Length: 337
Ligand code: TRP
Image 1: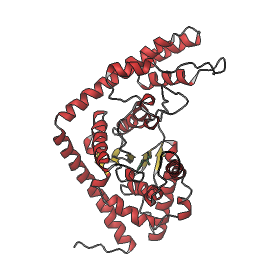
Image 2: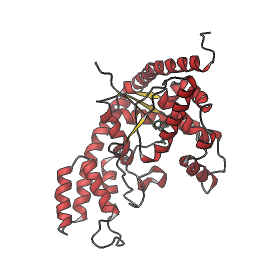
Image 3: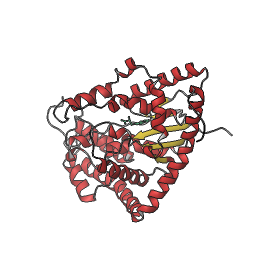
Image 4: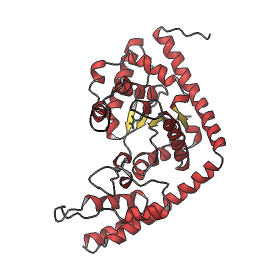
């Protein structure tokens, strides 16, 4: 029997899951579970690289776990990064196979460190933020993942991961680490309904994202207030706001409605309120199902937490095996004390 290929992805525990996260990543993760052997990890070690509140970190980590389960990620595929501390151990070893020069060229580091240097930040830039891509490489390589579902913004980190793996393999004289490939399937860029020039994002403020667990009235209100035409779109072109609403409709699986409304639009007869209502209906239906699942899960939080601890322990066994082999290959001590 052919072994299933392995998929790994990580997600940062930053509170609220919005439809941009869902349609842009999580929905795809759910689907990948059918075809691949998947590990999804909530990367709390990564979340320490920028200024943060320890109490909130733990809360957000569990909150994200419940959200991921409610949206269809299977418990056995899910772990919390800090429950598998071998990620951090492998990160150290990989640091010694990482080119300092390459690391200085990471654009996410440049973006985030300049964020910290300006208005919002206090100017503190941690070495952890600089080293973040190496920890990400450890996340991927530790499970010998074949594929990593990512957006374009993470392409450079995956390229670095391959570089590190290659250097390690050269050093140890065998193809020990799998060189992982990106999976770019179905990554949709959902925009903010309040400012369709920008990506739907939590950091822009509450008007700029729609929570997938949002209560129906508020969800409908948010969709109804979506910016459609601002008047500065050239004649004959669709404005980003309208395009975004059509994208949401199609992402939500309402292709037929999408096509009908698109035909009306092309005929110059579309009333935006009809488009908005259709989007609101579609999102509200998805949201209602997720809210119900989440309510069921949170009814017995302890049981769910225990399940995730157990799955983390199970997933950890693979990570431990890799670290044992890596220590063997690199000349580190590899004996049980
Ligand atoms: N860096 C990713 C992001 O910012 C999160 C991440 C951490 C990740 N480890 C990973 C993604 C491993 C894919 C694989 O979104």
